[in-house]
Amino acid sequence: MKLVKGTKMPDFTYLSPYAEGPQSFEAFADGKKTYVVFLRYYGCTVCRLDLHIFAQRMAEFAAKDCKLMVVLQSDPNLVKDEAPLGTFPYEIACDPSQDVYKKFDIAPAKSMLALIGGGLFKALKKMKAAKGFGFEHGEYEGNEQQLPALVLVDEHGIITYSHYAKNLADMPSVDEMLANI
Image (tube, rainbow, N blue to C red; front, side):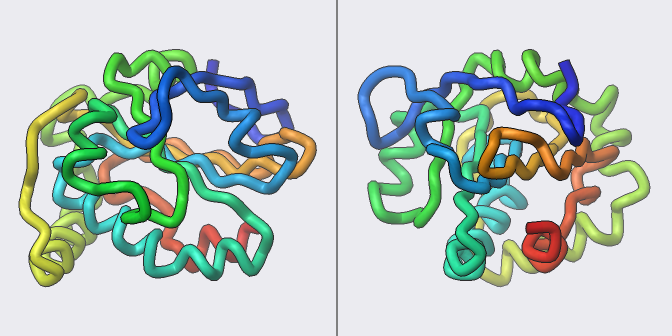
C-alpha cells in the first residue's frame, strides 16, 4: 500500500543498530511529528551525504518538535560497526529484508538508467559534495536500484506529506522538508 497524504501511517517494525529485537515505528514516534525517510543503504555514497546533512541539521527539526527516522536496507550490525551509537542524532531503522519497502510500495527503478532519470545533474552535484566530505562507497547491500521516499506524520499518526521519488535525486531538500512541518 502506498503511503498517502491524509491517511493513517501504518505501524511497522524494524531493526535498530543500537537496540535488541524488533522496534516499532509507533513506539518511536510516540505521538510526535515524525519524518520517515526511506533511502537505499548505509554504504551508498549519496545516502552517506544525506545522513550527514540530516545530522548537521537535526536541531532544526527538533526546534519544530519533529522527530526523524531514516530507513535503510542495511544490516544493523554493519551500521553499528561503522557508525557507533551517538553518530546520528536521529533514529536509524534497518530493513535488510526490504519488507517495509515492499509493504509501502517503495519500488526500485526499472534500471540503473531510470534510477538516475532526469536527475543526472543533481545526482552528480550530490556525488561531488559527498566526495568533498570524504565519503566513499561502502559495502553494497539492499537493492542497488532502490528509489527513495519520505513521509511526514503528524501528532495523530496522519500522513501530512508523502513523496515517492521518480529518480535518485528527486527528493525534497532539508529546507523544503522543514518548510512542510
